[in-house]
Image (cartoon, rainbow, N blue to C red):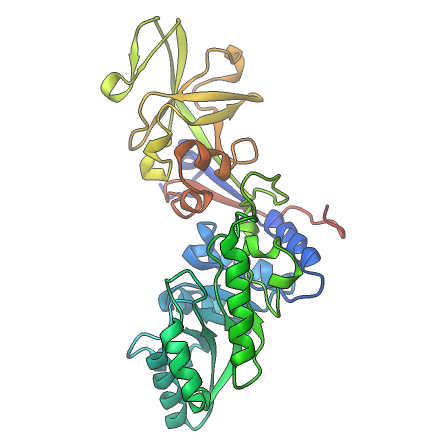
Length: 378
């Protein structure tokens, strides 16, 4: 049987991805940007949702600039958005120049030697090739550091021969609006931009940066996690919509006596006679083991605790308080979704929603829907 065979699907857990919710999230961000163009970050296979399905939806909504992490991601995605500006964040690795040109991919240049190689390759082709200049403003990850920036200022001709699309940097703590590094990074970015020997458009704000205010937005915003329902600011209400719903099949129900252990290592002991649902979801499906005894699923309008250890293929859930007719073998529980968002589960697991989304397993049957989008998105 194939994964699309109805009999097969009936035995599997499922992942529903609402592309309409992605559309609505993009429109919310565009409205907040008040005229500043909005790119789309679709790295890590569209944060686990499927870049080849997400990117064309964003293109339909007017998105024209897309970012991925790796060259392989860019080459794979190019056929889905043939006319878009497609940018590779990880930079220009030696020997990849011809591949970037062949597929029309714009590298984000993170070091002086990358600038030199890209300029030289364009010279051999007789044209200035497009690129984005990445400067580090405090994250100390990718981008020209202070020493390389000073060297560049001493030899401004190093910028010649390249079609510069943007100057960019990346915020390290934008999801914490009061973190002092936000203002420090903004000041440094503004200083670097003023020192540039030539005018460039600028891109600074990620998802959370969009919500820090107009000073951070410049000429292009680069949201990622907000497109996929992630909250932009820790501790604040989330204005974005969750487009993901993972539903796990109930494989078996059993009643266990008070004092009985459930799962590996007997980490959970029933405090009362309890009904336990064994559900087809585990860490092989991207449901982290750290949710053992800490996570919840939604069933019948209730949150039910995950009890015992999360195992490779299974979780066990206490459904004692759910009416018997609402918890049945073959039925579905919401493992992640509007009732238990990736951020909710991540908080319980001591991680971030990014990790849960990008770890979505491949055993789920994936269903894509495109719910209607009103003219005005609240």
